[in-house]
Image 1 (cartoon, rainbow, N blue to C red):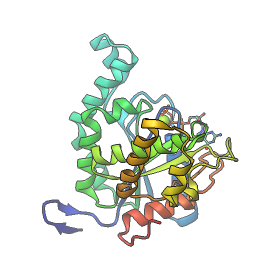
Image 2 (cartoon, helix red, strand yellow; image 1 turned 30 degrees about the horizontal axis):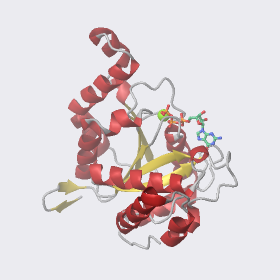
Image 3 (tube, rainbow, N blue to C red; image 1 turned 60 degrees about the horizontal axis):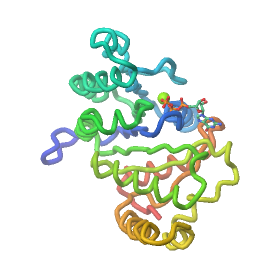
Image 4 (tube, protein in one colour; image 1 turned 45 degrees about the vertical axis):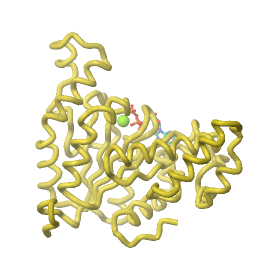
Amino acid sequence: MWTMEGLGDVDVGKTIIVFIGPAGAGKSSLVHAYSRWLEELLNYRVYKVNLDPAAEYTPYTPDFDARSIVNIHKIAIEYGLGPNGALVKAMDVLASKISIIEEAIRSIDLDFVLVDTPGQMEIFIFRDIAVKLADALRRISRQLVVVFVVDAEVIRRYEDYAFISVMSVAIQSRLGVDVIPIINKVDLEPEIDVGGDLISDISIVTERLKTSGVYGEMMKSILNIVWLYSKAARIPKVSAKMLDSMEELHRIVHELTCSCGDLT
Ligand SMILES: Nc1nc2c(ncn2[C@@H]2O[C@H](COP(=O)(O)OP(=O)(O)OP(=O)(O)O)[C@@H](O)[C@H]2O)c(=O)[nH]1
Ligand SMILES: [Mg+2]
């Protein structure tokens, strides 16, 4: 432990990775796959956090589980809410109990903490919980990144790549945390040729955008700004199912958290 001005005690040993992404993109599967890869291949000790109170099933066994402090079924009945309303309420209850989550993560002495978030990404990201969680995690460790998981089946055009790049930077600016976009389920789309290595040259992406006119110009301008500020200059293409390219994800996580820096 060491002290950094304004942040109090900061644990330099713990790397925290928060998985955010649209419903069904593979966040929980990635927490499972990446934790297994870290544990079995590199002998790291990994703490798994489930922050989805509505999860019926997780492929991994959570070490900390939001379902132990928020009961979404009780909330739905008590407040007379439907599934989305109950999840919004559950997220707000969770935000009010952030100190419990913070204390649980702070107190464990492990190498990695992987945090799984709810499928309804907008309910997480647009509520207080996301900002409070980022603040709490920053107090615990400065080795903190968000992985923004997108399904390979929705990345078909360079415009789609542009969209996820913009989303990543938007999440980065809301949470104040570096964001790594990743494309999951590449086993279903092995021929995908958008993203990956090509994006290390922004001009390739902007040249291949098909959108013309004012929206095309807007997209190019936005991409150039995004390029200036995005932290990860590559988008790893992985498969949680096949445990494919976990090392590529790990390399980018390491580059962003170790202050050693080559992101190109
Ligand atoms: N083919 C393939 N399927 C995958 C992969 N990763 C996840 N899946 C499948 O995609 C579905 C959704 O995966 P989850 O891990 O539950 O995704 P999630 O983002 O946690 O979903 P929610 O929390 O419900 O939003 C499941 O049926 C997974 O088995 C992958 O790399 N390849
Ligand atoms: Mg999930």
